[in-house]
Every structure is written in structure tokens, then in C-alpha cells.
Figure 1: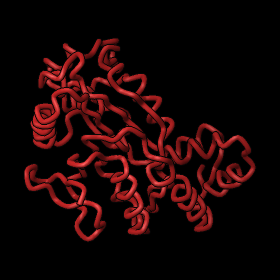
Figure 2 (figure 1 turned 45 degrees about the vertical axis):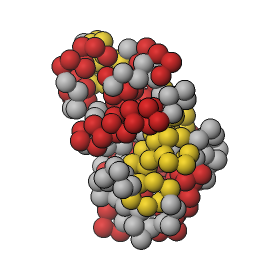
Figure 3 (figure 1 turned 30 degrees about the horizontal axis):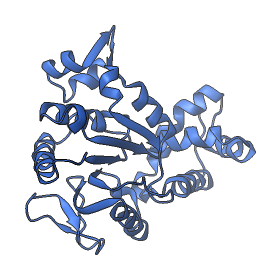
Length: 270
């Protein structure tokens, strides 16, 4: 039977998440800690968060810390999430390619979770005629080692593939294996998956035409959020576009970006 957690244990685990990722857990949502790590406690035969914290202190290889942090991260996502936004992104990519016909477009999916977003972008680009030499380079990153491993494997449950994918896209791009579906390798090969901390790691080099960072800023304190926006700006070409989540904005958060006049709901470097 699991014993009640002490406030010290909860505060320690919340601090670990913030130290490793920059993300904060609001006081009203600290209950998530107990629920998120319960499978780890069960597997290790532990009965309390205090025992887990003692294990974290004693652990030297960092593997247990990685597991705890991964368990606390919100990996909620789906294929073609916010479909109207993806449609607009497709239009924007075509416009960018026409404006620079000899250059390969570059896309960064920051906070890519388990890979549904970059895979959706690769499918979208193909459907819009950006194939062969014109196919954009897609870099997909996440702070979670576990999420990146899942994204590289590109293996999803029946529920996950049905959530956002049409039957046509499922058949065209995925192979069914019992209750699991795996993205075809020709699709996965279009994406470079990397573990990356948006707040502390150097940004991917080369300059991007489109950056997606959806529902990541929500979990940062204001000063960390401003630093993250600065990082994104460093990675972007002049005239490139930034895509945030539906409940996120740059207004009042940073002076590095302004709303795009051409693409409603997207942002450009100021």
C-alpha cells in the first residue's frame, strides 16, 4: 500500500523537473506527481514518494532521474493536431518554396513529443507536392529521451493512429502489426530526431523557415519563457514563421516576435 507523500518529497520532485527541463508544475496540479510516478513506484517495489526521493539521491547513473522526469512531462499530442493550422502551414510552405525555388526549406518541430507532429508535417509536405529534392528538411526535438526513442520507432497504437489520421493516410503511410501501426521507413527517414533542451542546449544550426513550438511555453516561468523565445529566434531565418499552441502568444511575453500579417495566428521575428 502506498503511503502519503510528504511535502518535501513533492517539492523535491517538482524541483527536479524544473532543473532538468525548465518546466514548472503549478501548485494546483502538484497532485499529478503522485499519479505520474505511481507506475515507477510499483515496478521498484517502493511505497512512497519519500522512498523514491531517497532512491534519486542514491542513484549515480541518472537513469532513475530520467524516468521520473519523463513520467512528469505532458506528452499529449495527436496526428494533424489543430487541422486548420496544419492546412495553413501547408499553404505557407508552398508560398515559401515559390519565393525561394532553389532552396530546400527547413522545419524545426520543437517539443515533438512522441513524433506525431513531425510525421504529420512530412505527410503534409508530400501531399502538397514538396517531394524528392523539394522535400523540406525536418528536425524534431524533445527534452524527453523516452519520447524521442518512441518517435524514432514511429510505432503507435490503434487509438493513436485513428486520432487525427484518415483511413487514406493510415493505409498510405503506416503498416498494421496486430494492435500496433508503424510508420513506413521512407516517411521516418525524412525526419532527424534529437533529444534537445530548448532552454539550455544550443539551438540546431542552419536556420529554419518554419518553427513549431506548440504547448511548450505554457509550462515555463516568465523569465524562462523569454529565454526560450530568444532561443527560437536565434534558430530562424529572416521572414520565417513561428507556430505556437492555440492558447499561447508572444504578446506581452517577448519583443523578439510579432504577429504575422499574412498568416493569421502565426508569428514572425520582429
